[in-house]
Image (cartoon, rainbow, N blue to C red; front, side, top):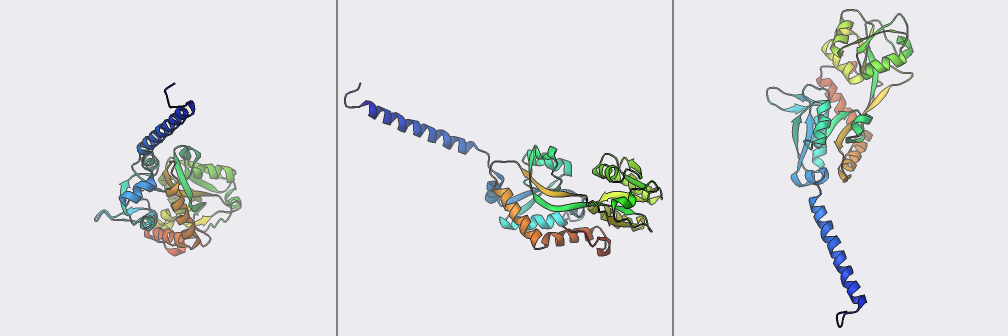
Length: 283
């Protein structure tokens, strides 16, 4: 043993060296850790969102000026104020916005249903709205419940493979159900008098009527109420501060009725009238 240095002293030196090594490794790992969304938006003062052309009531792009508007844009502008940030628009689609989050092209995507498949790869906020289902009914027919259309004499149309079809077959199995390849094909069936009702989620039904008021009227269907949450999508990451801020923002603005005002303003941009919005439709 080295003169003047006890075994206990050597152990202490070794412990200090070990702690120092751990600290250095820990610092290196922290330095190599990817920047979280919260950190990036705080640093850059830029909030990147998926923007979907022609998807009112959430998004609309002016082809002349390039300016964006719609309910989701109003919400995004208000969220950006939290960080004193500006918006950066990344044109996308509902399906691609999930991929854009995964590849770090955007920080936030609006109006996504939180399906289990999507939840495997991205995170979701609290619900932005609860989106109820109903139908466009031909003139002279005003169904209020699923039982009203669950009859052999009622001709029901929907788009093939959609949640509209799943819902129709579950709650109106006795009706004459025809599933068309696209929503537009189902609308054409209504327009030509080959159907009595077209099953659609509220936003889609109201928007379709704004384009073609002669189709009939939109009705929410009850007993049971069928509704799905529409959420904001975010990147899945260890730092939860960004989603915590968004959830606080959502809870506050839904509580004071501001979400409803933004949604109604977006619906009116489709050309719909306030009279076209069912009184029992809430956000």
